[in-house]
Image 1: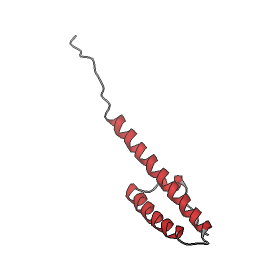
Image 2: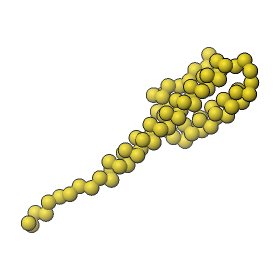
Image 3: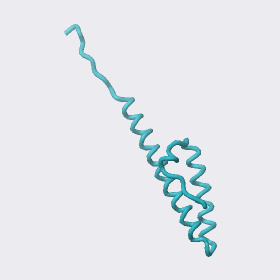
Length: 81
């Protein structure tokens, strides 16, 4: 039986892989939507797409947070005062 990967499993993948997976899953989902009698399969792809999108958003947020924290400015006191 076909199952959707969890967000935790997807988080382990690189961003380009996630984007490729999202495009592929969306393509299949749209083709299935045109068919009849495949509701269970459609739901799995719908869940997969939602999980991949969540993983991409989480990865982007983590990247943004790490970029912001590494660019923080530190101030030191001048010892000649």
